[in-house]
Amino acid sequence: MIDEIPKMLFYFSGILVWTYFSKVFLKTSQTFKENSNIMGKVYFPRLSIPFSIAGSNAVTSIIQFGVFIVFFLFHYKSEVTSVININWLLMPIILIPLAFLSLGLGLLMSSITIKY
Image 1 (spheres, helix red, strand yellow):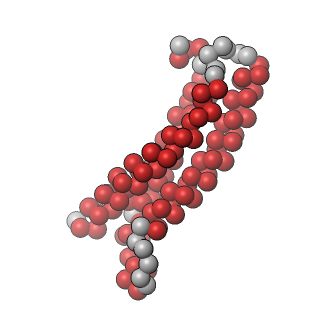
Image 2 (cartoon, one colour):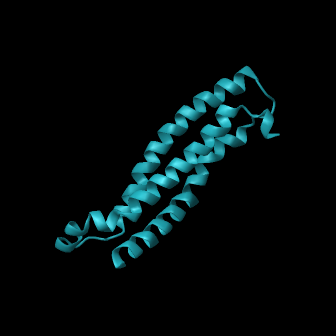
């Protein structure tokens, strides 16, 4: 079944999800170390920085998903294969639990980095 899916759509969908996870995880894991001078001077909710990182990367992922939709519609209209279905358009729903997973792992890694 995977052999019938256009390879570009298959790989592009995986890259979309992986880049979102890796960017949020890497930036969140370094957030307390990089912003330690701000956190010592001013009181504000400390989790606002990691949530802003996840939100800004979600915006870039939505733009990338728009490009994915263009390629998806091209393959869907040209009927290259019969395997392409509309369920692929539900892929942004994956970003919600993925955001919490990457935030959690990034915050865990950040606390370990600060401690050691």
